[in-house]
Length: 224
Image 1 (cartoon, rainbow, N blue to C red):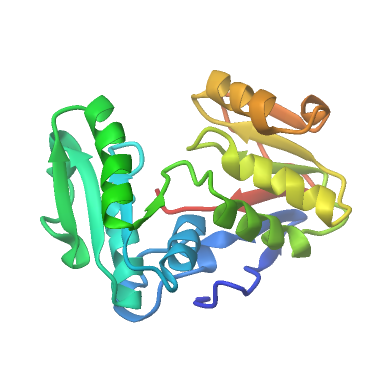
Image 2 (image 1 turned 30 degrees about the vertical axis):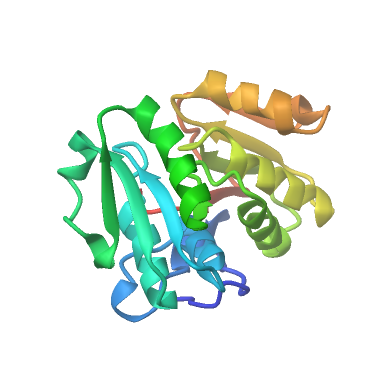
């Protein structure tokens, strides 16, 4: 496993299909259960900060992961969630304070207000922050030049795929990015707002994951 946030995660060639093993990044020691892109971003955000805060939902159960990153750095963490999601999470994961809300609408507003009040750094569930984009862009360095398609699951609103696209452009690599997941409208809207003007020529968005073929690269990003 890799613990250095600056290290490149490996690319494995399995029968002509590439796998970008972002899941090889792990928080150290007893926190090694928390792996992947989210874990690396949480570790980056925790460095030199007074505290971390995040949102924990059933779709994005990242509260314990962010709490673990905070504990590694010896800083406090505040997890905002609602009742149903909280029942599936340890009571105080890694010593974090859990703040319960009655609805997701209230939670979103209250979390940002809480972050402003405490001065804690907020980790967004969709990874749409400058630290995340820069980290993912760097990870594109070792993507093979002959990659035809990059297959990435959008369990966010497209921020990871956007960072991969930027990384490919930065490192002079030519590949189509296939973004799959249920929120196709949200991903398309995200790229229209934040992607380059010509994004539609490089990004294909679909609900179901495609079957990888020769020279495709599967982005293995997270454990949830």
